View 1 (cartoon, rainbow, N blue to C red):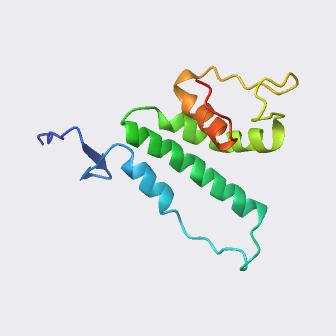
View 2: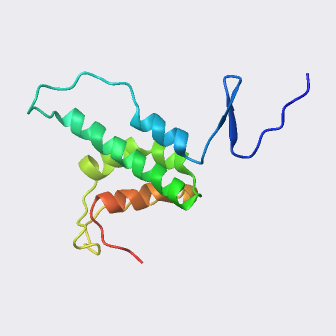
View 3: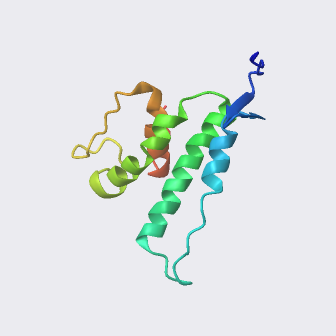
Amino acid sequence: MPKRKMATADVQTNGHVKSSKYGDNMVNGLLHKEQKPSAPAGKNTDKDEIQLVLQSFRLLIADLCQQFNMGHPGSAIGMAALGVALWKYGMKYAPHTPTWFNRDRFLLSNGHACLFQYTNHYLANYKAMT
């Protein structure tokens, strides 16, 4: 059986070939997640808030990669929950005073996941570091 040539923008999933733009499938998958019953009106639980932050975090990373048509979104999206846990519950920092002596420092040795750190700084209200 001869193999069919695929264009660079075509993706093969489950035996079907679909045309795709870089990042579109990821963004659509994150937007159209399975609907879950929500909390009663006016009662936003902490878990709902964290899920909203995580979804926004992941969509921001996917949107950045799609907008600039480059980047490695997988590792940054995969570490989103870790970032929320560290920056919200674990680390001591002051975005208005980034040189505070007693602040916790976060070192990222995985260079191609720098979108993770940049997005955390953005969501924590750090001013531009450049």
